[in-house]
Length: 123
Image (tube, rainbow, N blue to C red; front, side, top):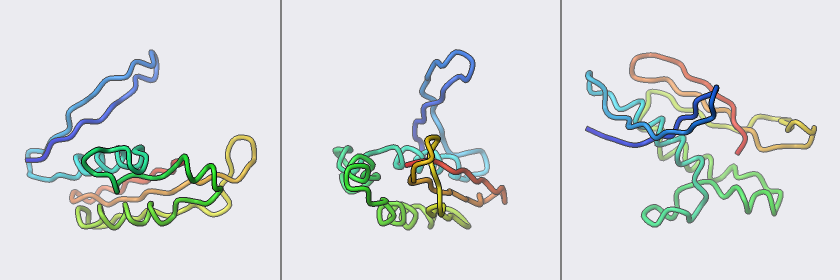
């Protein structure tokens, strides 16, 4: 049985709470691994004392203006064995709310239940 923690935010009050995510009754770890994937994508490279080579170097990417494609693909390779399908790729010609080029990435996963989950996020 796997366990991880993820933080959620109430859209009405803005209150943030930590929620425990564990293996489901059928023995699938899909939600545990998706929560861990989200945490790794929020993690800055070298920030974890236990997994220093995990995370996305977002701050250095902003400074150097080089997209963190290598680290996104490395993260995809680490998590792909836990899903029937996991795709993470840069969205071409993505811009932020000011119209400037921005590193937006598309995350697409198929769970063991057959559910398709897709999300686009800035890194």
